[in-house]
Image 1 (cartoon, rainbow, N blue to C red):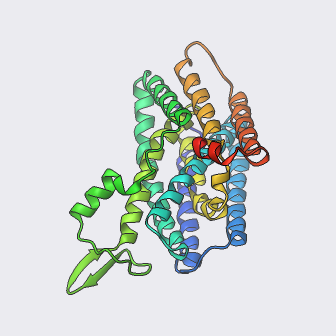
Image 2 (image 1 turned 180 degrees about the vertical axis):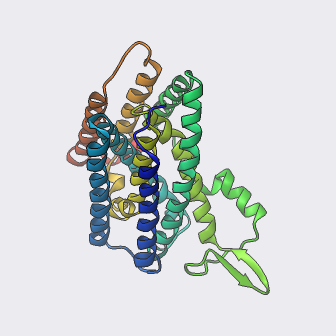
Length: 313
């Protein structure tokens, strides 16, 4: 399978990710205080700037096609990440996680997501390379997900009913009361999980479910493993800052799920019809960016009435 990344590029990217995570943990990982909107905006701008600089490097080293594929893949993953913010808002609200501890949960959730995405993308690449019909299966999966979004199905409305959460509570010795920022505590000579660790399990579970949609979607834009992985990881790295930037207003994007459903339907349809219809990366990028711009502007400029907004969510 064609790939833009040589071993040196993979090594430099991996080292860069480790360095960025280490800086993030060292600078803010130990600060148990709420993240202000201004601070979140600055961090988000840094992550977007780093992704843009990497994109320029892809253009310069790998060519225009690879650069366009990274842009489309990154934009698609960022759009789907915004949808994941709805889930985070629900989880933190349901378990009453203090805002000063939310960044700690999200940091370790992102570390786990970086590792899990590597596994899922490797598996997806191997399947796509060996079995031609896997792309069709991915396309059908995306069409089904788009249909669920159109219908307004919300599997995370009650996170405490999540299977992984219930198994965790049943199998792992836990305490009911929070212990500040700690995930585990030692009491009376025994180790116990705190509610914050249970929330982290829910965040990781939501990312696994999210990956089942987002990874097939990015394969609909590019089959290059290097572009698939790097666009995924850059979108994930900026997710924590984006959460603190958008969590207060994300509920106003009432038409976003409709826009995401249209994007997933477009990408899924393209994957199903790939043997008969060729859609260029430029067209895909224009569709993704256009649908996002229209649905976000529609949400902000022409918000529905309160009862209609509830139905859209």
